[in-house]
Length: 209
Image 1 (cartoon, rainbow, N blue to C red):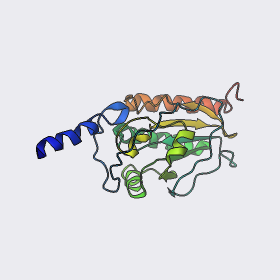
Image 2 (image 1 turned 90 degrees about the horizontal axis):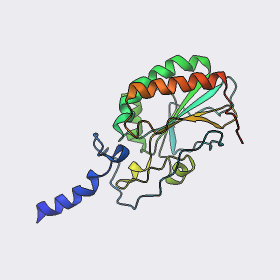
Image 3 (image 1 turned 45 degrees about the vertical axis):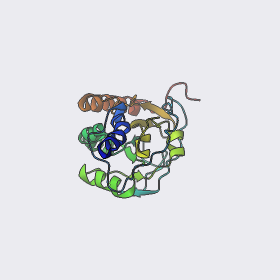
Image 4 (image 1 turned 180 degrees about the vertical axis):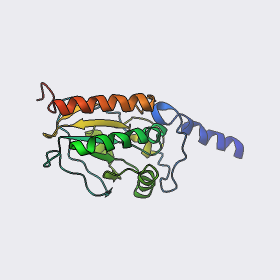
């Protein structure tokens, strides 16, 4: 009977993970299992939509600049979570994009629903130099259009998504949740790079409301 109970407990977790598969990294020690019902999934914010002000429990590497801050031509907003293996695999490419575009007035900001210790470990492990928020609330994830709708631990609620936001605070582009759907990290980085180049040439989306 004890073995049977263990099997029953493991079955729900096997269905969880990035894009519906089991995560390849263990749950952080400071991220307890929360057997709550999954929240409804949300669609990414469309191009031209106003981007909500970013909210976090706290920030690593300082607080992010305002979208229209002097000298900021574009903001890359990366919504990520440590349990998603493709967030880790794409981090080197994102670092390369930061090195290329930060001198050209592109600000980078990360935000996660991970707790402070886990988010800090991820930022240090991947040498992320830009501001990264942690502890994002479920309601804020819905506002940002990144709730996954997946069952399992509450931390699986965030569907990794990357947005480009104009100086006027509107969505210019989003990555179709490439990491969440297991897109090749190199191809994903090239797609982001091309989108940033286009946005720098024309930072305000056509037909913005």
